[in-house]
Length: 354
Image 1: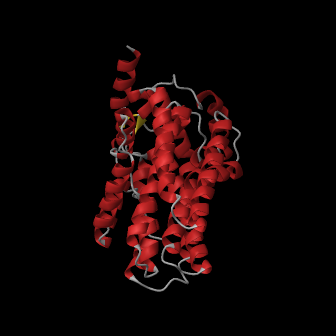
Image 2 (image 1 turned 180 degrees about the horizontal axis):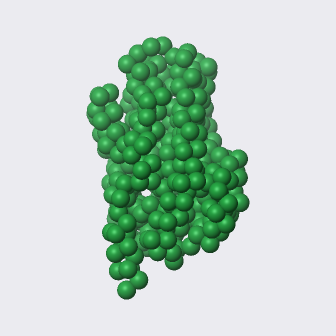
Image 3 (image 1 turned 120 degrees about the vertical axis):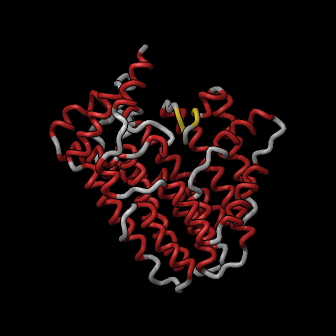
């Protein structure tokens, strides 16, 4: 009965929030697909997909089934795309290695999604049931470990500095994840603490992908560092927009209900800034954050409070600043079609020309 009531409320409240229209947020998956098409990346990304499937082919069918559940659910493939573009922009010719290690990095990312959903108690991921709900907790945990292991089977064959880049990324990712978990339901989370979390969980792996693509082009340290700066800032902008979409996004495109971060107890930038700006948001936040029992109507009302407080506006402005900061790191890279497309990427992410 409760589920029917919530579904009825959700249908009644279906609309496109004004902020989403104002910013022109795109369907990210469609934009990334179009962007890859314009660059002629379909062949390389298809090779990444094939390599991922090769790596998760196990004699234990359940491991392959769980891994495919996540891999086949899609995703933006931002990390492989960045690695390929960084490599191409530096005139790199070792695309086979880029594809190989990009598949490994994407498998690491997919494995973390399995474990993240377990930590968060998530119900949906990219329009599908979370892997642990579909296959069972034990099976999902082991499958995630399996994907990590297969990724490092690939990464371990490369030069020590490349292995170090990927290992450092995994360390930062784990630290970001545990920071987020330790701060679950913490309505007093600061912007500084939030930034530490997303740098580790999201931005550092994106940074690593760009650096690995540059490194495999056998370029100098300054260029690798530049792509690291680009990737880190673009990664931060990407995560902030993802957080905004949890407030104003289209549920069909998101593949999950809006407000999922709040129900799972995860503070995001729009919510933090809204609480700073509006005493009513701050007062109501502790009763909403991490409360999985609130209905669709209550969730929609709280999301409207966040939008009206200016939290979304302020978070959007922050994503804009980080995107612009990322572009500055491309100044020393030789002009090419690939550099031009790297410069266009932030526009796809934040939905407004910069």
